[in-house]
Length: 276
Image: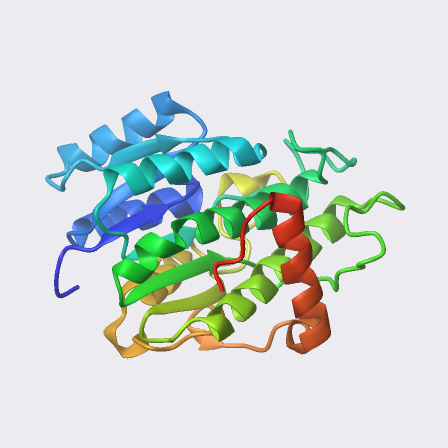
């Protein structure tokens, strides 16, 4: 990094978010870490500060409650003069502890769609003025290769619920919304990209889904870190990556009508105002 960048990481108290926070702190970044527990956030911030880096600032919110997302965004807008990067990392997997049966968020939405897509969508739009004012800025969505086409007649999966399908649908929604946001913004103002950081890293979300890992946490951290700060990716936007390799997403992500339908539905479900 050529200067100290202010970077917000959601879901930063364990797994990929924590590993990324530690790596970016070592790079000299000025970090804002999000989590659901202030105690966990304090422990992470203290540990990073004890290693000689600047102690990160922290924000608490349950992303299953959109009012808390709005409050978090308002707090950040009030306290920060700039935001160079938003890493939308927090999410729910396909298995426990959030269950394989259908559950709903505080707002009554299917839980995985609410946390993995709607919360990040709303947070990004709420922070977009700050990101645009900090140009060139970046948004990095931590998504997945596991993607299932959205059924707009049953977006909340009220019929034949399956946790894996719900997870995959939410991750495709995350990618599709990123593509649409990238199309609406100048690439040299805010670049928006999504990635599958690595496959079955040994993180809590993966351990709750399966009993084995494939890639290392370090591989996922490095792939995500590249989208956050690599100079050669300046101006690269509207892409999906598998690790460090550009990859085509599910076909629905390139269906203009489907992308527009998701964008409009997301605005309605979150109550967000379109910035365009």
